[in-house]
Image (cartoon, rainbow, N blue to C red; front, side, top):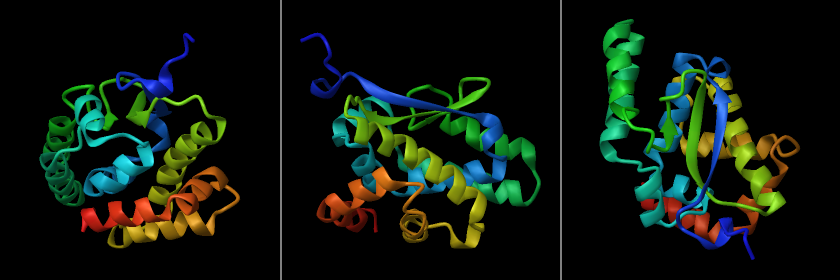
Length: 178
């Protein structure tokens, strides 16, 4: 009666990870997956577009800032790199919130009380982190990310189950992101 997380549009699951778990370069890779693939991110978060836009918007300008930040990072112009990242994160209402000093907050997920979906969400963030460490920038894209998740099935069992059970919806999201 009092637990409304699944049946309301104003409640979400936020996952915090230590800033120390991502290097600056790797966080750009994770941001690339999240911000470049808006519909896939919406799909994995189990949010409607309206809910995601209200609580954790993923805007084209965010992805453009990620691209500019990467160029500046590669050119070792850290001042402007930080400026572009700050342009994305100047509000806590973003898919990835950097306003906390010690953590990166992922704000994308729909509120959840289901154990398998809860674990799927945590596994998605863990997969983003590990994929970012293991993959060169030249190979960062949604297809290599999905291959990474699939090839590490045991580590991301709930995420893989979700992707397999919702293949049609996932394919639609990936088509919209093209």
